[in-house]
Structure formats: structure tokens, C-alpha cells
Image 1 (cartoon, rainbow, N blue to C red):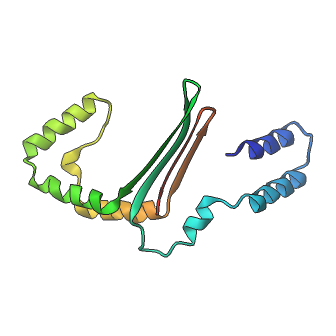
Image 2 (image 1 turned 180 degrees about the vertical axis):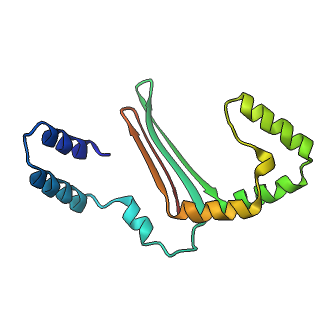
Image 3 (image 1 turned 120 degrees about the horizontal axis):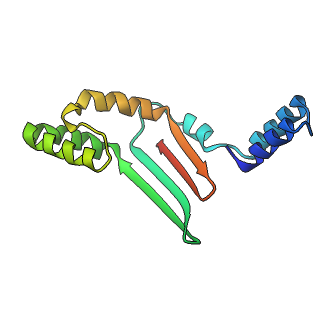
Length: 140
């Protein structure tokens, strides 16, 4: 949620504006600031090639930025390669990930599940705003 949208909702909650006025202000915000999601919706289906992670944050008063673009073909190849790893090694890797706080079972990773995930990623954009960071995850 943007700061401007939050301000409008706060004014509505305080009774400073009516619901109709709030609706008009939010509509004006949306017209003035086209969202990245609408440009993603214009993308042809089936053309998703990358998983993108953008992070804008402030670390110790210094602005920092992370911009990661992972080819989905790399993910697909990685999943296929797990078939070559012995089950005991996958079990040990899963145990170590769980100890590190990553509850993910590598033994359950299957190529057909990855394709379903990629299809759903195509329709998804995740945005997280906090006072000191903004995170956005999407496919392009």
C-alpha cells in the first residue's frame, strides 16, 4: 500500500472525508501512477522467462538496492539435476536446510510441480512495503 493511499484511508477513518471522496482520490492516484502490475498483465502468456526480485532498503542510513533476475530455465535445469543426486544426500541437505530455518524438502521437488509453479508465478506479483524497505517479486 502506498503512503498516499494510506493517508486517504486514514482521512476516511477519521471522518475528514466521505467514502465517495476517498474513492475519487484513490481513483485519481491510480490514474496518475500506472502500476507495474498493469504492464505485467499486458505481457503475452507463456513468455515468462525470468523470476525477478527487487529490494530497495536503507541499511545503517545508507540506501541499498538488490536487483536479481533469475532465468527460469536455470530453475528447471536445477530441478532436473536433483534426480541425479542420491536420496541420502538430498535427505541430508533437507535436514541442514531445516536446521538453518528453511523448511523445504528437496526430496519432494519434482519437475512437473515446478512447471505448475511457474504457471502460477506468471500471474503473481508480490510487493512488500515497510518503513525501511520495499520488496517486489514478479515474473517477466
